[in-house]
Image 1 (cartoon, helix red, strand yellow):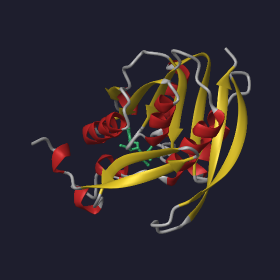
Image 2 (cartoon, helix red, strand yellow):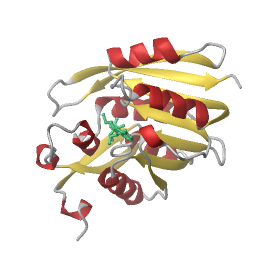
Image 3 (cartoon, rainbow, N blue to C red):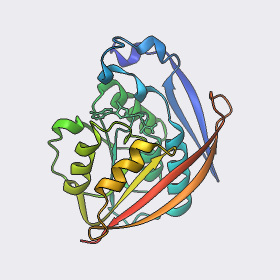
Image 4 (spheres, rainbow, N blue to C red):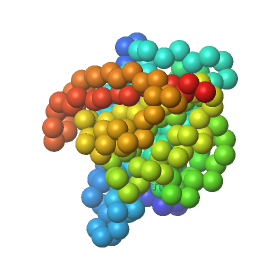
Length: 217
Ligand SMILES: C[S@@+](CC[C@H](N)C(=O)[O-])C[C@H]1O[C@@H](n2cnc3c(N)ncnc32)[C@H](O)[C@@H]1O
């Protein structure tokens, strides 16, 4: 039995207008903690974060992909926003450095009838040179030590005129990153806010901010 198959899972139903998605996430995230002193081992991949719900809904309501358009979801965790892009016919690559996250995200895509690519990469050593029409960043710009690596990936892995969707629950680290990294000569930016209600969460209400950047190249 694989390590992923041994994880106890629970099913989530995600409701979008006219569509219901079933995803599996870890039933007990604390059971996945193996080393509290190692930030890389924090199992933050094992659930769907509020930003992912907000970004998924934003994409569902607002984005129409052209045939053949590609999407890279970075730090995908359980993969919800990317899966919504694939439902809307985008060619999806789910990426994470955690192999268990990728296995579960891939399974989540398959169980919704989707075929996706999986890319195991660490932002600090990102070797993929493929370029994408869209890059998704759902609550991954939270660590000032890691954010510069993501800034480089945004620049190197986006096609000309490509789009970046950054979603976060009003995180200072994300705002600080954008303040320092965003260059109006390279990207246009629009900002949206959406409300996310999660009944079985510690906090039930989240304001999710979505930065929609488009390359001017
Ligand atoms: C806060 S979680 C967000 C998960 C998902 N995007 C969501 O919104 O539900 C951060 C994600 O980034 C991944 N991650 C953290 N550090 C990483 C790194 N150095 N390289 C690649 N992925 C990383 C984690 O495994 C996790 O899936």
